[in-house]
Length: 293
Image (cartoon, rainbow, N blue to C red; front, side, top):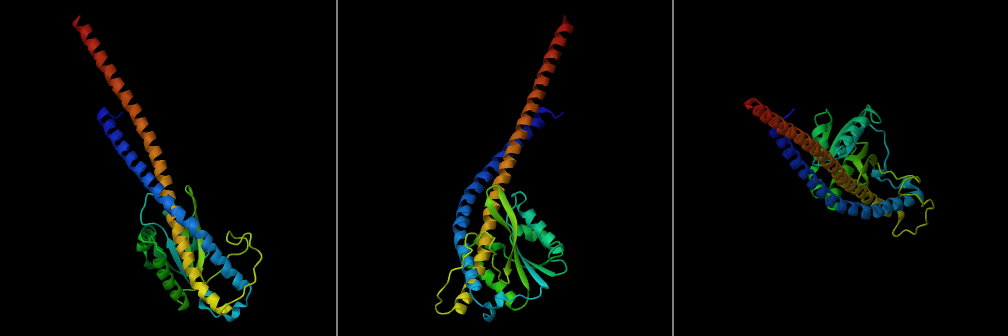
């Protein structure tokens, strides 16, 4: 059994850890509130843009558009846009992303030439040592996740697709559901595809309206496609940021609870050892007194 000094040191250490995790929880809660507000306000616009583009395509003969971003070709080279975080201590947030990438590599995309473009240091640090081709890391975007920065990166992906560097580009990210729940999603960025009628974006909108086009349908659709792609990636990154703060807040809450429980157990052990030591001292005094008599 540990002595009193060791138990006091452990209690002090656990208490310090508990204060740190509690502070990190409160910081993450504050950041989550802002990130959740951003993604909640963004989703209606992103969904409406996707819905509008889908309706335009459904009401037209898209074969004459000749837009390279909608061209479907045989898949040989695939790019995974992997969105994680720059910081740890977020539970299974980053681990789940890495697991999904590995599962895709040996599952749906087995036999394909796979390259990774990482947004977030944590996934990059793990995956670069797993014999994957890393075609760019864009960790700085998470420090300033503005639409302008994401739009520039999307332009790079669009250029890679139109030049034939990749035949398919998919995004792997954590979708924010609530503070305690995130879901790893895999969404196709290129070629541009639209959600079907059973998706969240299209529920309740099964009837496609008639449009009057000005100047013309082809020009409108070709102008909307890059905007839709940029918004798609921007929404995925913002989803991931909100998910990260939610995951970290939950992880720090559990860590604080565990530290509190451990501290209480250590205090109980400390009191038992202290009581035993006092009892032994009393017994020694009594025994000494008896010997003198």
